[in-house]
Length: 472
Picture (cartoon, one colour):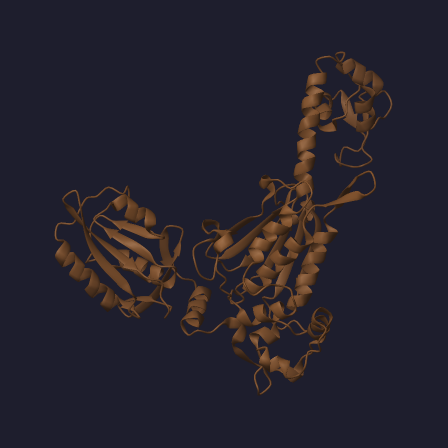
């Protein structure tokens, strides 16, 4: 029975006994559960899930209720249930997700709000406390009125894009009805994020195309690097363009037509970027959205985890409910047909990727979230297809190597008495796979010094050739 109750708990902590002299050890979890998605505390069970029992469950139950009422503010919703397992009594404290966030632990004149990160309850950073305050007062960051006057700024890109995508003019009254300004002409944060001028420092997008599969030095290993700031529509267009410019569209010829094979689905990229711009946390100072492109994937990372609910990797994408951190911006982007109201963006990313030629289950997009960020990973369909071809070619070369005449190092050195490219050497000896031939034959000769590069400072230069060393 206990195992089933533990399995059904979304978040849980285990305490072998009730700490009354150090109640913070478990009350911080009550605060964290209330500020998050709820959770359960098991008293009388150790960390290995073994039932040790409580010696006086009645007094412990009274102490738990009293300490929560004294030390947690506002008072959270909770249910305390006694359970007997194998003759041992335990207490199960179920804490509901609260609506009056933040819920603080208070003692000695200090008030601290806690959140869950992994399986720990930690003090909430200031920006998360601010977001909890907005949530508890039923407000959002993008709807807050600022001190900036609408008349001091221009909205050319917004109005032109709205006309292009809807066929309608953006009327002066729309600024108020869409939540971009109030009746007195003061902009909301949503309005500031859509001015032609850069008025919100955190409204930025950093894009990098890395050379390879991992990050390294941006000075040595970045093939392309861009920074954009300002209007959300401009960031969306610039991000899509950056990915498009650093992607390829291969094609396959058929009898009467050709099949285009893009690295990524355009609609999936747009959905991922819209998701990042709409649902990111703009309260985090010094934050920005990052696009990191690698040979095999593109990662789009935005500040702020799931607004409500468990981490995205623990959710069923097909049934996830839509909760918007910035509803004003989301509504406007819906009007401009960049997104759908029913919260199907993540499902659209998957379905559009599935339409790509060469798609397999291995290439399904990945989604990850933590307390501080949200990550979408789109995989390069052509990279994985190319890798499969390389593996096949390598196997074919390895098999055919058994029947080919034995290639000696002297034969290669004799052929390279004059400068030869890698392709020339490989073709001369009847091999198709450059990677396999290089690893098996060329690298050992390079390491021994018997073969030399003509451009040693740039091993991957397109002008690279090989020549036999004069000293052998």
